[in-house]
Amino acid sequence: MIFEYKVLNDSNIREYLLSYYLSKPFIYKLFLEKRIKVNGNNINERFMLKKGDIISIDEKVEVEYKPLDRKLDIIYEDDHLLVINKPKGIIVHDDNNSLCNIVSSYYKKKGISCNIYFAHRLDKDTTGIIVFVKDHMTLSYFDHYFSTHEFRREYRLLCMGSIKNKKGTINKPIGSDRHINGKYIVSKTGKDSVTHYNVLKEYHNYSYLSVLLETGRTHQIRVHMSSLGHPLLGDVLYGSDNKLIDRVALHSYKLSYIDPYTKENKELFASLPKDMELLLK
Image: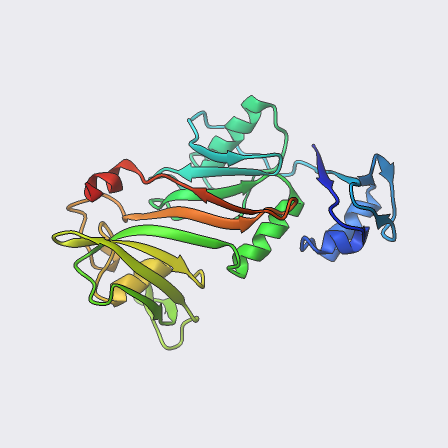
């Protein structure tokens, strides 16, 4: 599939590609295989781009997922992105019953021939915004900014009890629990982990919070909230119970990012799932 990119400023083609965090070996391969053109013409790595030029890159489809015909809740789509409101109870990949398989079916129906790349992950029972990208350059761009946390992801959650400080920052390192496989704990030898929270509403025996991550450790929100004595509702692994909800009450609610090709600031929102909505009512 051919992907096109409109040049916003005069630049050397190699510098342009590097600005989207493509690796040098990948750039070399694009030129070696003559898969990159400008305004329909073959070029070399010294070519000077002008504002308004159209770069086209021929992407090879390398990984295919078996299509799984299920409905997608699409928040936003353009030539390079597919943003989905993920439901509970489904993994992102590594299974014939994954979100990647459903995206594969969607692309097939739409006649879109491209690789299936996810820019980040969500746990099986976490709902909300997840970003799929259609081309390698957009993937490199999102990979970089998700890793530096310059793209802001806001989560919504329900946790046990009433939190004393209604707004705050949890700065505690997180590492693996050596005694329980797949569990994480606050540990002096762990990786730096920072979570910002804000209590939005309190109920009789649980609270509704907004959370922003400054780092992105596995189970970070769950571990940090549990460390305060307020594990998420439904989070049996970290000290809660599933009396009110049958999964961890965590939702990826908002994504703020800079569009790679227009440089516009964008905000996307994912509506809360029904199980969390019911608890808010």
